[in-house]
Image (tube, rainbow, N blue to C red; front, side, top):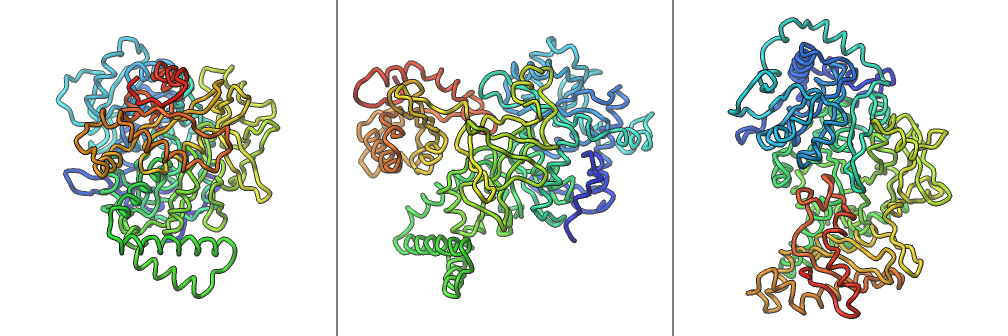
Length: 614
């Protein structure tokens, strides 16, 4: 089947959904695992369940523009609820499942959500703890079948969506009429930012914001109904919702498969054999270090073979970028594929044809490594406020290290101070109930100020330097962009997470969370096998090892960017413990506050490094 057309007449996500359901009702739409078996739901059934949700919402008095929240990990009920809400003319407010109850209460209260769809008992407990402070919230819908005390305000998702026929008192025509009343300028969603620098802001995104973005992507990428998208980034993140669900499933009619959990991504990839997935750099960083660790522990012959194949791939990709590779290069590349790359591709399901990275900068070394093994990662760029994609590399127009040229219809420019600015139909309508914050980021002529620093090369490729607000200015007046250095350091098998510090200080230092598995293996080789992790991190040999590792990796940096001291941290940074956003971005202010005493000690001490324990 050919790729669906990017019909400009489609102005709303509801129109796109109905058109796909009509075009291919029997095609598999959603794929999910239940009782250890993979099941599929076709587009006809998807529409029936979404209409049941929409009809029930209408019987509950939901009007156009009413806000309805979803608090859940990715699962079929998430997207069925989302489409049901929009078919009823409602506005979806997605919430990360990892949010704490006070964060949830703030978002629900500000957006005045009337109904919330919840995943399980854990999420129900969060809502019950704050419900007295949510006067607008009238009903709760539970996705998991739970034995909980039900009342008029709590109901089961299965009873709502799976019952035969539409809700009593609601006709098919009534739902279709409500669907038809939704306009492109109507709000589709209020997406709250992760809040790396304070309270989250509600980004108001219209149907037209989303549909224009998808239509622009479909101009540069071919997506087919036979494709399978793997869903593992949170659907509360606009990148997954636009780049996976809306683009792949709703517009293109491709199958949308849900991973069971983050821990089972590798297993589910093998089971589903996706053709496309969208990810953040953290996934590729982990895959990169895992592959290198496996190679390092293999025999001499296998290691030599892998290194030969890697060099062959690097030479081949350079030849492809600069011109047509010769016959010998083609022959070596085929041999390397059959001997090495094919096995690695098998671990990714064996059918992967398109991989997109976004949400944060991808270290070029990692992109080059995957390109060398024939996995071309198309890095892109965008923000929640831009629905989100503004730039992306393309199969026939790609520059590793850049985030690609602008999408058709999207304006991108760089201000005099280096800040990237965006204009187009994908730019948000503003921040919910916050005109002052909206005015702060929007120019009078409609350009959105991203807060990111970058440059556009003569061929139109955008290169990101750093976040404007994250630039470190040393006491000597030197500007240091932390992200590129952090991304470089994370390519070390011994470094899991890292954050540079040094603003208004006289040198740069690094907070480092080790890769404890790699550190333990290294320690065993050094006769430190009997030490527990705490003692291992205190050992002088360990600090010396990290000093050497960092010095080697940063030897080409200017003197003022070199890391003079380091602080080893004993626990991973996680969204659940507050150091990361749900999309794995560093909450720099939180981390600084958490380790403030250790950091002050580090800078007071004229010599030596920290060990993470103060």
